[in-house]
Each structure stands twice: as C-alpha cells, then as structure tokens.
Amino acid sequence: MQLQTPPRSYSPTEYLELEEQSEYRHAYQDGEIIEMTGGTRNHNRISLNLSTKLDLELKSQGYEVFMADMRLWIPRPRQYTYPDVMVMAGEPIFQENRTDTVTNPLLIAEVLSKSTSAYDRGDKFAHYRSIPEMREYVLIDQYTCHVEHFSKTEEGKWLLTESEYLDDQLVLPAIALNSSQGSLRSRQF
Image 1 (cartoon, rainbow, N blue to C red):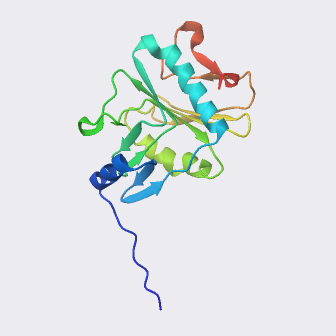
Image 2 (tube, rainbow, N blue to C red; image 1 turned 45 degrees about the horizontal axis):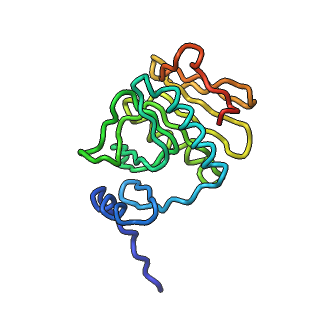
Image 3 (cartoon, rainbow, N blue to C red; image 1 turned 180 degrees about the vertical axis):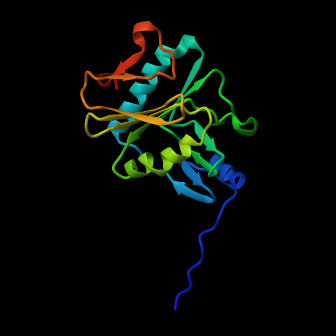
C-alpha cells in the first residue's frame, strides 16, 4: 500500500517569496500554488489590443490600466492571480505597500482559453465579485467572435450582455470614456 502525502499548504507570504524568485508566474488559491500556462499568440494579441485601446482612451481621465504581469490580491478566498487586463479608477491600491500587487480593480477582462474558460466564468468570477470596487467583467473568446460583458447594476446585480459580431459595441458604463468614445468595437481587439 502506498501512502499519499497531502499537498503542502503555503501561506500568502511564502507564495510571494517563491514568486519573486520564480522564472514563471503562478496563481495562489488559499494555500495552493498553481503554475500558469503560457498564452497563445491570439490570446496575447487580444489582451494587448484591449489594454492599449483602454489605456489610450482613459489616459487623461484618472484611470490606470494594467496588463497580465500585475498581480491581483483577493482577500476572500485568499487568492493571488494575474488578470489579462485590469482598470483602476484613480490610484491603484497596492497590497501591504507592495508595488506588484493591486487590490482595487474597477474592471477586469480575461481572454478565454479552452483550459480556463469554465473557471473564468465560474469560480474566478465569483472571487472577482468579492472585490468591493469591481463593477465590470469582460470575457473575450479567442477562438470565435464572442464577448461576454458583465456589469454591476445599482442594485448590486450582475447584468450580462453578449456580442457576437465584429461591429458590435462594447459599452463600459463604469469607466467614463470621452463622449462618442464611450464604447469599443469588437474588431478593435
């Protein structure tokens, strides 16, 4: 009979120490360290196009846009992750005076892959909803023209809007884009 050793549980501090020395990025979920897979060319292009477009449109309006390498801390359920794109209103709030881990995204966008789409729509979205500042969540399918946009209503409910055509507009009510620039077209990313 072979005995199985239970997986080791890491503290958030241990995770951060290991992550600082690692060549690769890892997510952290309540004690478990998970190696992140690399993205595809399409995944990278979509993330870059969206973050660039948002950064250009929001630069003079007091928002900060981050892409992929900025870590996010979610206190409940004790999770570190690296969203594809994040937007903060005003100054980012960094965790415990760190400069590599934020806590206050207003908008998060994820580019879906076959291995992560169920998690991105399910548990990950549930974790993101626990962030008080969070108002919008955008899921972009990298294989087809399909965007899911969740926005938090005044009543605290999440409303889903889907887009499936290149000329569809993605309206982002939580971020105040200039007048006619209040939306993005799917073809832009």
